[in-house]
Image (tube, rainbow, N blue to C red; front, side, top):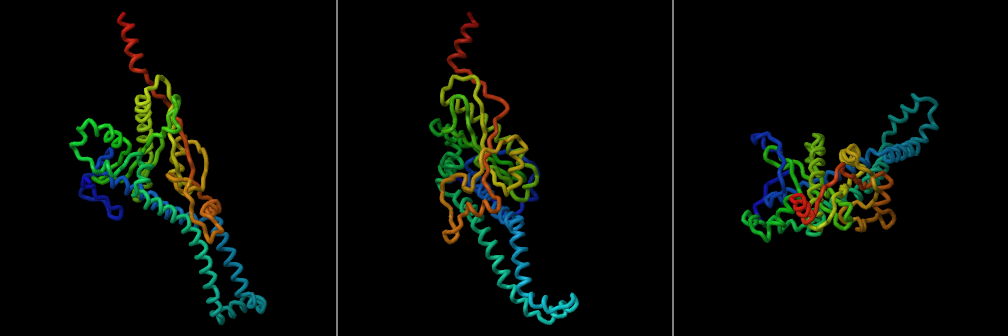
Length: 337
């Protein structure tokens, strides 16, 4: 494997490096960086979904109800014995041992919310870990990343390898700052859904490092994604030898309702919601998830807390104009005559 660019998401960027932002295409030495950034998105979703669950109205109502019931249960006798607020406060101060009865209640609350959170967040962890496997890399990039990572500079001048290497390099772009990748976007074709009239492309990954998450770089990545969708469409028309002068481009994307940054990005840029699903894994939506004591599935917990994977689509505002090469030559000859 070609020596990879070192990318440690737990360390700050080199403050001595030149403070320039630039767009960089995927290269063999950036293969691991691409996986690291895409995997970090699902790691971030762990904390995002956990916070979403803890502060969800259902969770707060649950905690308040349990604590209120426990309060009346533990101090019910003191309430009935007290003739005034002052007397109750006096009894409360002299019966502090009753506070120990709240410990099991607090453990129950923490255990219930913790279990619900773990069921969802662990699914995101599994996706993040899975991206290092061959089957996930093929879904994310549509080519064997390990093979690409082993390519050397001389391979780019080899006719047999050039088409693969060129196609792979155009699938993913980075935004680099101070010499380090801080954001990534990958766009892949969806040939199974594409026809002679409509071409489908999908944003299989779009992510910005946590420290720059609020910087607005997602807008830049989305513009790059649209550009790549058009490039993929042009290549699709050429490869399929289509005789068309007007083909629509539909770009697809996934986001999670707990991720307000991405959902807002897509919705504010005209993406339309196609469907919502409790299948967390966008690469293998048919995969079965764990259940709690065979009673409650992850999907049920997600519905309970309003966490869904939302599928979006956007029809790009222009079309690819294509004239078949043979037809173009005929027209040129006619004009000469």
